[in-house]
Length: 239
Image 1 (cartoon, rainbow, N blue to C red):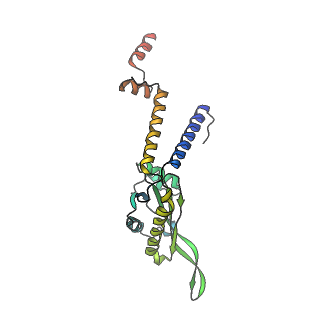
Image 2 (image 1 turned 60 degrees about the vertical axis):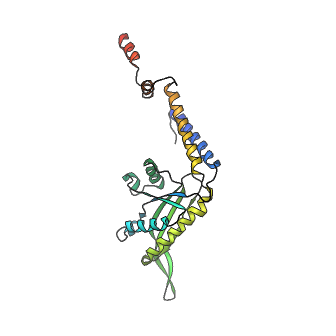
Image 3 (image 1 turned 45 degrees about the vertical axis):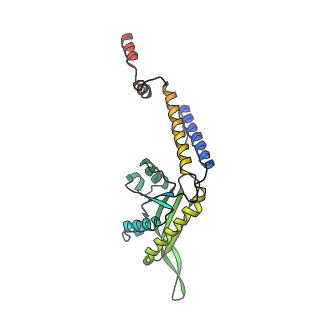
């Protein structure tokens, strides 16, 4: 992002530097223990328009969650009731993740399932034929930016239950075996996040001119740009 306003651009640049420093700190943090559980936030599946009328999405979501929850290493959290801006057609993964974070979710891994039909080659009567394969792709992303994977399983439309089971197995493998070893320790990240928030608060207080000896009312007036009573009275007498 850029701005023609120098002050706004300076703010944007400062935020970018702060984010870069935080990302580096997370990358350098201790890795999670191999025995530590992994918290996984699973979104409701998005369904291609070609399947929207024929597929029971609630049943599919329930089946996928049940399969993922069977792994004792995973702590599954459902992501539901997102605002329409995050569920509309055209909403990106970033839109949906931001909406989930706004609800207070902070997992180790995000899983964004998508179901669609894709062209594939099968056999019929000993001959190769073009078919429409029922496909479930799970976009698996580390919440810390330390890895991503897109496991995908497919079969015929009549094999959708087996496809869901196979996809769940592939997603579990991606989370535990691919992303798991490089996930940072949750307590270490919590400490970094707390320090980051404190740094932002300190900067805000400095900008507002808040001093350690200020009482609560004075801090609020400074923070929200309100005049203190004596300042308002002085301004009135000057008029």
